Length: 278
Image 1 (cartoon, rainbow, N blue to C red):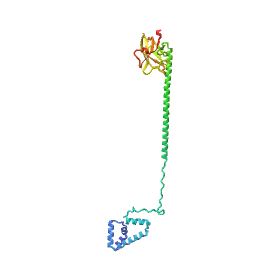
Image 2 (cartoon, rainbow, N blue to C red):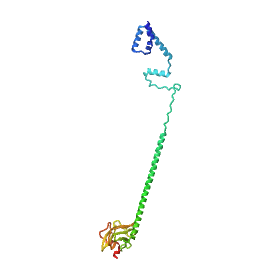
Image 3 (cartoon, rainbow, N blue to C red):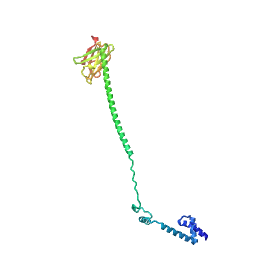
Image 4 (cartoon, helix red, strand yellow):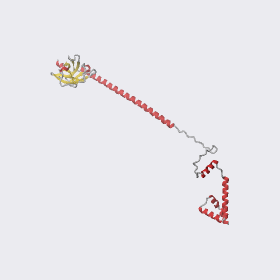
């Protein structure tokens, strides 16, 4: 009997009621309750006490929750997703909606400003580039024009030096009956065998594209080809012809484009004698 009292006071029965025992302990408690009425009565007493404690400490749930749970258990087998959710009143639960923080747009503004600055910089560079190109073109044009002036000055200096050179004689060719107003000045140096035509002072009718003027030197009564030239209103400078020595006279004929092997006598335009023939 003393062992039964000790067993009851050991706390194993309370643990059994709470479900906090091993399978072996559970079987032993159930066997003891069958063998000993005192153990069974104690178990009943413990269960009643726990029920009274649970009832005293119980909190009634809200009416809508109770109905929802019962309906879920009886109708939907525990699935309460088919039932509408009841709006919770302000005194039951107060939900504070957090205000969404505005995104900081400073980076967007900075990017837009940088992009605008880049576009303005490119536009400025393009404008500077165009101005530089225009300036470069103007400089090239000025250089070309200056080169032309320099060449003209050099040519004029050469002409002046040539006219002053005693080695050259200026042979004047006058027009024939075919072209009585024609005139041509030929600078001739027998010693250097040089022949040049003063195109700036030439007064010859302009030739067409199918014809050229051809200069001839008369040497011992025979014509010698000295080359071809064109006459136009803008002809300037001295044109160097083929070299010759011992020329007694010069003559100009109008020949087919490129010249002829022998002069066309009926197309004689100008003629003049040198000092050697005098």
